[in-house]
Amino acid sequence: MQWWSAKLVRIAGITLRVEGELPRGGERAVMIAANHVSWLDIFAVSAAWPTRFVAKSEIRDWPAAGWIAERAGTLFIRRERRRDAARMNDSVSAALQRRDCVGIFPEGTTSEGHALLKFHTSLFEASVANGAHVHPVAIRYEHHDGRLAREVAYVGELSFMQSMRRVLALRGVVVHVIFGPVVDCSAVRDRREAAQRTRAAIASLLGLSPEDNPPGTPGGPPAAPR
Picture (tube, rainbow, N blue to C red):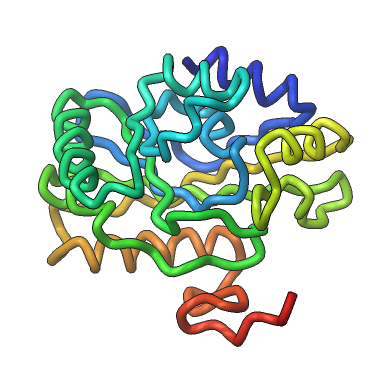
């Protein structure tokens, strides 16, 4: 899984840079919580550390990326089915108990990477129930001069194929996968505190204020008309 993920990132023309302290496998239940920018995020993180991500079921249909994600043990959720959330929570708990590293994107959708959306606390339920170590991870795509590579973001009305062509046309982009200090979920009150502490850590790694929200999100300024 790690080899295939790293290869896909290289094929996309992206250079991977991993920073911070990686998880220690086997000692505790481990979860990775990251901000979400692109369809490449799953593979950038998995190239740094083998991770089973919770992801939408549509990913299965993506060329190449879907094949790798499925064989990497991705936990697919059907977001249109409310009952699937309970099944997914059980699946994540079972994976954590097996000491698999489980990855989540608490924002629930992508942004351009310039701010953080509101975190969905329900995704932290299994980490609290299992006393997991949650590793906050910041993902940032940059051009060679340090500018944010917004072209990598999988946002708006872009189809997967359009996004992939846009990424393949880029040159000199680096993805920074930055591991922050662990949030010990055996020492938090509930899933809300776990989410708040994780979000604050990711915001710090990205150089943002924890209150930063992009336009059109809860707590943020109104969205500009399109």
